[in-house]
Image 1: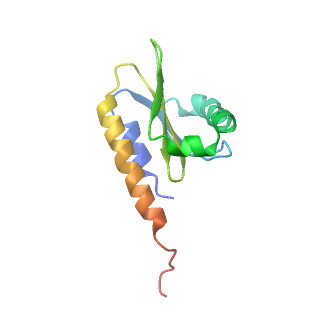
Image 2 (image 1 turned 180 degrees about the horizontal axis):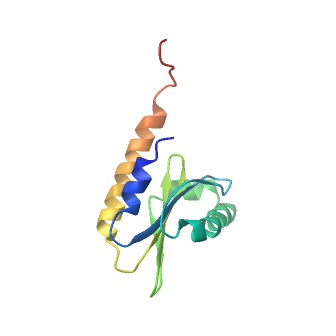
Length: 120
């Protein structure tokens, strides 16, 4: 899987880590400085979230976030899984949300196309 988009998100000001987590709680892709420390906990959080509210509810969400004085944790539904972003309170949220929306659209288009093999 091409994950250039996840690196693009991780480079936005104030974004410390980005993870794509599947419905089973496995980290599919990650980028950023704190990903190694936060990824297992974020994956577990997503799994617990799906277990508690259900897949249908999570699929309806476009974006949700929790904020503290030290951290913003955002969760966005993507066609391949749940995008988890760990950000500083002064992160550029407008740009992050815009990029996440663009990525969601790109992934939906990419994975709606029928499977084809080269040379056939």
